[in-house]
Amino acid sequence: MGLLHLTGRRLAHYLAQPRRHQSRPPTGDPALLARTLQRGDVLLVEGNSRFATAIKFLTQSTWSHAALYIGEEPLHPGGTQQPMLIDVDVERGVQRIPLVAYSCQHTRICRPQGLSAEVVEQLVDFMRSRLGYSYDLKNVFDLARYLVQPPVPAHMRRRMIALGSGEPTKAICSTLLAQAFESIRYPILPEIEAVQAYAGGREQRQEILHIRNYSLYTPRDFDVSPFFDIIKPRVRAGFDYRALRWSKDAGP
Image 1: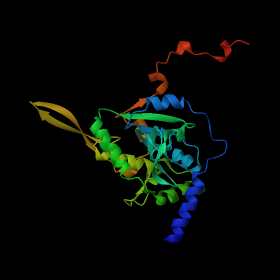
Image 2 (image 1 turned 30 degrees about the vertical axis):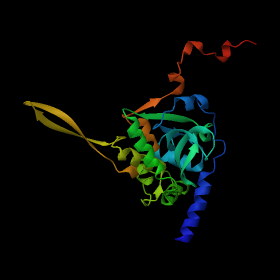
Image 3 (image 1 turned 60 degrees about the vertical axis):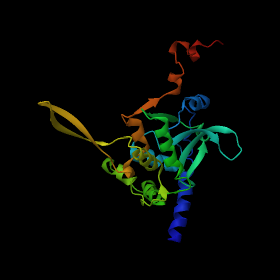
Image 4 (image 1 turned 90 degrees about the horizontal axis):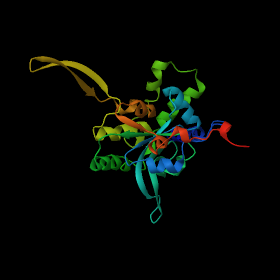
């Protein structure tokens, strides 16, 4: 077990390294992103590591990572207030990190709807109670196989990233978030069963939601979920396409 753990740690370190020629400037102003975020938002991150490349291939998505925004608080006792996230890092596990850590990344805000301040606090408390949990290294081995095997058939990709050990003190970013939203009974992408019912002598169609296992969730699910708003800071700030200055309009 000790050898496997050491191998997993070294593999995690390798996968966490950024790929060459994979970085690109963010699509928005980091300061505007910070002003737009609300406590309880899910922040999706594109990522440029070897690990991120595997996740994006297996999920056929732009997004490799997801974190929960928890508002402004000091990173260290006595420090200055700053926007903070609860994040699951492949090497450091569940941790609080400043939003500025993703200032050079392409991001997207996914906002749950209708949550009271009390429920948001429950959501944040769930994530905070997991601080210090380690990353599920079983998932690291599964993802590493993508780097040495031929492309994975589409029908197997979601299952491949859901092969973690499931131990209660280990975590993967999207599955931990899925557990957090499950704890407040908020849907992400539930399985929907359509049933026919009769009320007042009339036939009616009803939808029954079934919770999917949290291990099957990926970062992209928050993006495509019909229960999360996609918040774009530039648009929210009062975007006017007529005010844009294009290069062909610039003077000499």
